[in-house]
Image (cartoon, rainbow, N blue to C red; front, top):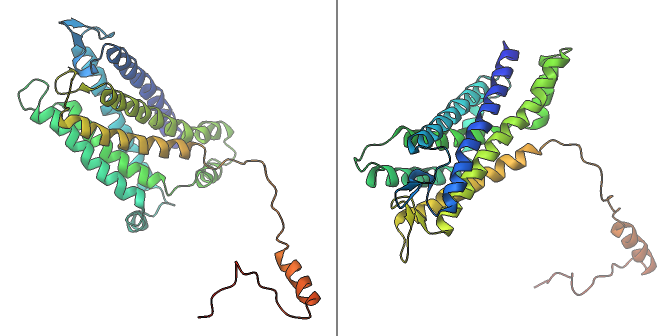
Length: 285
C-alpha cells in the first residue's frame, strides 16, 4: 500500500510542476505589459498567452486546489506516522519562533486576499471565488506542514525508508529522493509567488485596479508586501530543508586548543604565579 502512495505522490509532484509552469509563465508575460494575471488586458486587448481569461483563472484555481489536497495528504500522513508524536508536536511548536511568524504572515495573507476579493471583488459582486478560499487554505495548510516538517530530520526519514522497505531496493529508489522532490515543488511554487508579488509592488501594479497606479498606492500594495514576505520565508525554509542531511567533506580542520598547555608552561616559568593581561583581567571592585 505504501508503494502505491509513493507513486501517487510522485505523480502529484509532476502535476504540480506542470500547473505551476502554466501559472507563472503567463504571469510573467502579463507583467511585461504591466498588468496582473488576474486582469491581463490592455486597451481591451488580452495579453494572456493561455487565451481566454477564464481559462487562466481555471488553471490557477485547479493548481491551488491541488496544492491544498497535496498538503492535506502530507499532513495526514505525517500525523499518522508511528514515530511522529502529534501531542508532543503541538507542545513543541508553540515554542518555535518560526511558527508564530508564519501565523502572523498567514493572517496578513488572508487579509490581502479578502481585501482584493471581497472589498474590491473581481466581479464587483462581493462574492468570494473558489481560488480566494483555496489560497487562504493553502497558506494555512502550509503553515502546519512546514511546522511539522521542521521537526523531521532527513536522516530520520532515510532510516525509516531503509527499515520499512528492507531488501526492496526498487521501492527505496523511489522513496529516498521523493522527500526532496516534494520539498522542491513547494520551493518552486513559493518562489514563483514571491517574485510575482514583489514584481507587482515594484512596478506599482494594483490588483484592485488591474494596472499601473501613479502616485499614492492602495492598501493592496502593503498587503502584497506582507504576502511576499510570507512566501519568501517559506521559500527559504523549503530550500534549506532540501539540502539537509548531506554528508559534506571536511573543508577546514579543527585547530587544537593549546592555550591551556601554554598557560601551564608560563605558570611554571613564572614561579607558580599566573600572568594576567590587563585586557582580560576582571575588576575586583
